[in-house]
Length: 161
Length: 119
Image 1: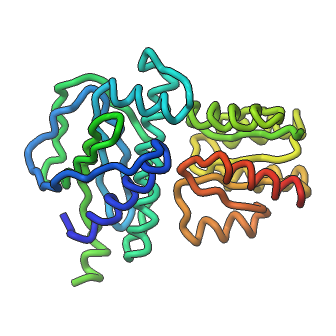
Image 2: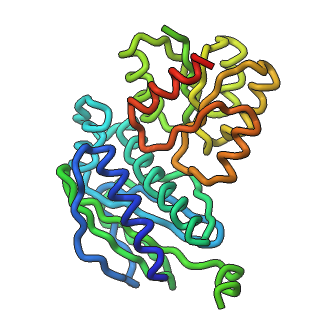
């Protein structure tokens, strides 16, 4: 995992969550993990392709997910229904999109696949040989863990060498 | 009051935009991808279009070009999380009149709409 991948995701997540939720989130200790990710109750997954490739995951409890979409839409979501799921997937999409713009400015242009949502705790997701950068973020609605598993493409790595 | 078409594959984002627009007295038509937008534009002839870029079936740039072929006077603003210069330039060349960056900000959406309607 390249160190220059940290700031784009940190900045994007902070900006987007502050704009969407109306209060500044707090960052926890950033870590690197190689072992498989064990899913939380709700995980938005966005695949990245291009000069950097891999996936970005946004993990949270269902309570946090419902609280976030309730705040964003200005109405209560007592169930984590299809509309609420669409909202959480879109948050992942927007944060990753903002980070992709910042990565592009840093010389790593990339594109995104449509977001997916994993609902249910304790599924193991292995990113195999790609380490995951884990950024815990505390919001007023609860914790979101941003997991970034990206590697530089062969062409970009050769140019940098 | 204007008739506005909101195009986004994310249902949450469509409904959120609809809510803001309707609360401000506008009539809203929804489309869930580019192909749907082209069909609905011909049917409803909205005064303005807020168009997401990354969508299945037909993306926002392709839909913008189709709509401009059908109606060169169409007033379209692109709404996207991806603000790379190449995409912005291509959309502007294809006739987009404004660009709205996500995350969703009601004032920015209403401002873009005002700009479109004044064009």
